[in-house]
Image 1 (spheres, rainbow, N blue to C red):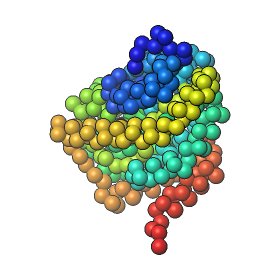
Image 2: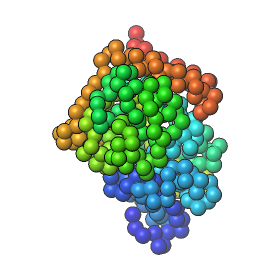
Image 3: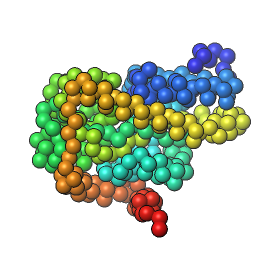
Length: 319
């Protein structure tokens, strides 16, 4: 967007996404033009791309201290934005994006309120991916396979608990070190989004991908409530009137980019492996205790019950 020298309102945002790739491209091509139009050039957003200001936890801390106006977050950062996002990251909660979109429609007001209690304005609930399982040494398509693997654990406590349940070794790393840890052989597997794997060129050392829908990962964009409330009401109203349209376009673009990334990596030589129905069910059963362990820690039983009820209604055929 323009350099913002004459803008009345200047926001500073930060994100792990590198400029021009995947999620960052959607921000520049879809979000910025709408901000420019609807705020009449009076709002300028300066973005620090590629993690130059640190991990998601650092960005959240800077927002709360007033040093930043907001940010774009990966799946782990979403739970720092508001811990209730952890519910939607539960292993094997969703079967596909149609279910994700249905639950977004039902639950977005709940997440809006949860973020507001943290002093944040949740603007877009975007997607990171249905993260896949990648490995460098052997295919991972069963519990027996996970027990032989060392996974990078970059996503937070829930991921480490999940890996423990699956019998895998977890190697805790920050996002900024995840790729180098795999390259150096300190770990030989990871659960990650396709855009990130392609963008870091990890496909040059990875040998296998299992496109199992082990978890859905959100990638929200949020501003501090202070920065949001400083905008004139007419600009707030205009942006909110475009919110769902922007969210839909953004998510569609990210989903297409993730699929293109997978296909490009398969053409490069990455081998796709899939779990048999029996192995998939064994992994799912082994992962389900994570739901109980996270209840009361990241979200309430009532919230989980509500989401499960919505999903059951969605999955039940209409007579």
